[in-house]
Every structure is written in structure tokens, then in C-alpha cells.
Length: 126
Image 1 (tube, rainbow, N blue to C red):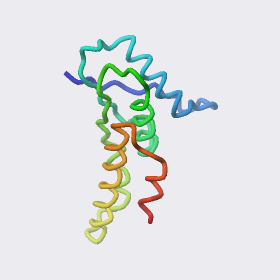
Image 2 (cartoon, rainbow, N blue to C red):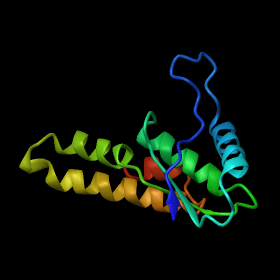
Image 3 (cartoon, one colour):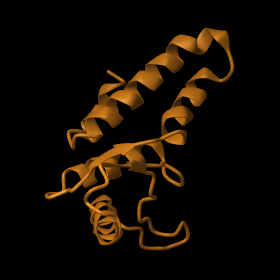
Image 4 (cartoon, rainbow, N blue to C red):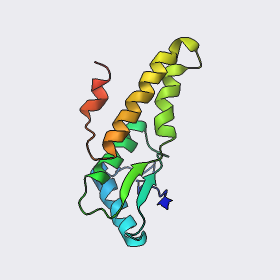
């Protein structure tokens, strides 16, 4: 069984937004209190986050020690948004949309193992 919990995020109107590390620590702390270690994995949704924020949060959680479960992503919006932005519904933009999807999938696959870096975001432009 896999669970799809939400990350612990600051409210949209909160003037002091939690850092990536704070989100990771609060989310894992909460999950450790309520999710049995026997659950093999948790896959997180990206709702309310930008594509890059969702990746950064997943990465930070996977860098924390002593995780009893596998942490991964079930990002619909965070994978689709940059693709749709590149595609714009035009056949001429399909290759750019495919590149955008490949890039987000690669970043999230690295974040799944705590190996994502912010430099990966700028590397796509190179």
C-alpha cells in the first residue's frame, strides 16, 4: 500500500513562508507520528506548489536520515504545467514540450533519491 499525503506547507497568505528544509522536517515529523513504518512508501502530490518547489521539497525530505518508508512523487500539476506552457496547443511546440517534460521528470527522479540540485534547473537552458 502507498499513501498520498500532502506536504506541510505554509498558508498562501502567510507572510513568513517556511523554508524548504522546514517543510521537509515538518512533513516527515508529521508522517512519522501517524504513518506506520510498515507502510512501504509515501508519494506526494504537488498541489499548491510550483514545479520547482515540489521537487525541492521532495529532495529535502529524501535527504533526511532514518526514513522508515520510500518517499516519491505523484506530481500531476508539477510535471504538466511546464509542458503545457511550452506546448501552448501548437504542433510546432511538441519538441519543446517533450524537452520540458523530460527535464521535470529527470529533476524529480533525482529528488526521489535526494540527489537533486538547484543547478539542474539552470542546466536545462544550457
